[in-house]
Length: 372
Image 1 (cartoon, rainbow, N blue to C red):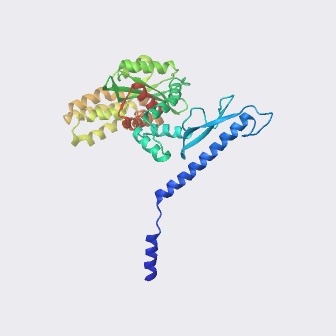
Image 2 (image 1 turned 90 degrees about the vertical axis):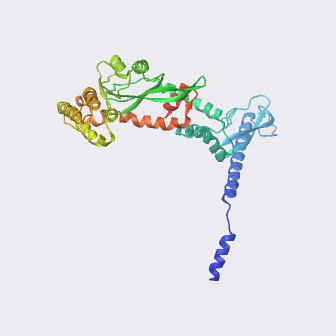
Image 3 (image 1 turned 60 degrees about the vertical axis):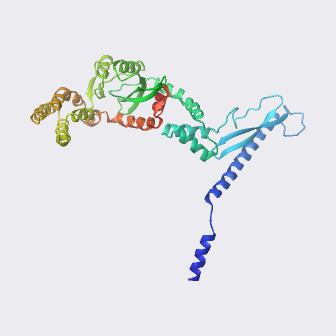
């Protein structure tokens, strides 16, 4: 019993302050990094002078003229560098670029945090916790501009090979305009090429999802070399179908089956949703186009009997638009009758852009979505 009490007492006496331990280790690591970098700078200065400090030799090419302090943010925290100054030449070194204030790995981490969905305010907090310094929103914005050039190059690169299946969709985001918050549309296209591989073709900013916006986007894609399109998959977006027929007259149009179901459900009372859903699914479970057309007629008649006139009218008019996939190989049906391959990308864009709220301009919204 006494041994147990002694053990308990000792357990209360021996305490470890985790915060102080981490702080101490952080100082040790920063000190080591600082000492190593300064030693490398000194060695670089010796190489440029072709002589060590205070060394007298006929081979000397330059002389030192003191040094100046530079702060550098590293993954170990902020360190102070003593950058040598030379009398006859500017001290430049690959160890640390001139005017650079952050290690490249720190800059890459900041960019990745922002693109992954961390708000600018949280980026400030995280950098202070990790490296002991706060990074301003302006700094994050300037760092992101480094990847904008790569994004622009990707958005305008040639599209090679034929793309039989083309998926189109748009998303509406908020942007500030002259002090007001207004909508901006981003139009996105992906495709499946002749080898069966899916790829993202492009993304552009459109004032809104209308015929003019879609025509400009499709002209952009065609100008980059988009060809061989046999099927265009999308929802019944205003202006999209007309624009698609204008630029790809030989391609069929497949109305997204899932979006079609949602349109029909908007005219069906909650108590009958399950029954109507099974009826619609039966249309797209048929073995061929003729059977699917017959089933569509049966569903229309049944909806009329259920006194769901608007739903019946929609199925009668728009139902055939969801059956274009029957003209293609059966093993492709499940993947080309809906816009689902593109929906996952659009969900990721929504998730990321929700953190921002309203963008300062359409270009920033476009670049963030394109980066994702």
